Structures are given as C-alpha cells and as structure tokens.
Length: 65
Image (cartoon, rainbow, N blue to C red; front, side):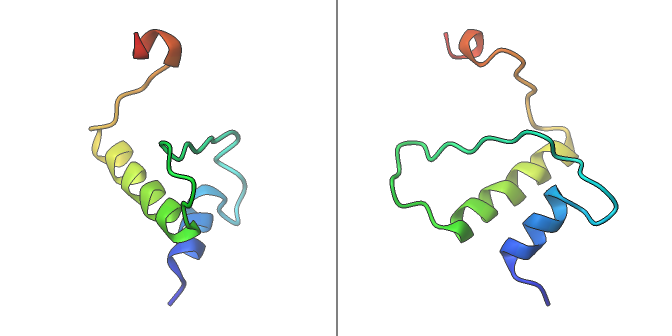
C-alpha cells in the first residue's frame, strides 16, 4: 500500500502524463506544515472537485474583496 504522499503524487502527476501544470499551496499562516498535512488537504480538495462542491475562482483578488 502506498503512502498518502505517494497517492497524492500519483493523483497530481500520473504515469500516463501530467495533468497538473501549475499548483500553488498556501499554508494559511501556519509555518510548520508537514508534507502529510499538505497531502491530506490535496486529497480533500480533490474530493470537493470530483463531487462538484468546489468553487472555481478565476481571479483571486476579486474573490477576496
């Protein structure tokens, strides 16, 4: 069984070619974010995207106002 980090790497960058071209991670002000914590957030985000509950934001500056 692969580790959580391996599962996320396979999700973002599958063997049959890259599907993720540009991804940015923000720690939300936390200075000690572990790789496992980040991997958990990526998996949660993927579930939201797949279920249709994620919100597409094209312009983050306008979205935050």
